[in-house]
Image (cartoon, rainbow, N blue to C red; front, side, top):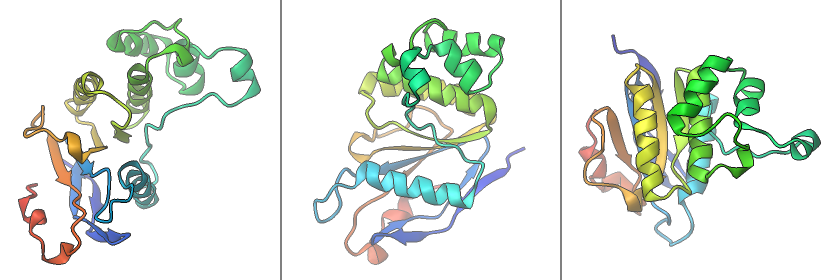
Length: 204
């Protein structure tokens, strides 16, 4: 049975229209944002953060797989391992922690700070999915090979009836999504968005 997880009504932010969409379990909404707006000012990740804040205000149990950094003195003195991150930080039991590490292709003994950017992001995403049915994630900072790896990793969760909203760069949008459960949404920096027709291309 497909249930509605999150419903976004169309709204404008900084003059840019965000179309209406509905997230259901077993689906991933992939929002593509241009790197620059109509005035050639930076847009991409900045707009993604604004949208994430808005979505989380609307649905409080909607965690973002934000890049984790070690801040405390104890963390800096005692290097955080994958094992400590999953078990101590994320409260995941040892058997699940081992399974997550194996799926990513890393060791529980690996130091968190020495993981590649892609593997670190994969670890954060998998840990959040273990504790939540719906998450927000982004592909910013990940290269093409890394994105393909993360897509497969995320899809394994979506196929288990979970759901997500993912943010990506419009410039890297493929002609066809790699999995059928992905619903793409293009954020276009149209100056006259109210009379443009790009929203007509959206299919739900």
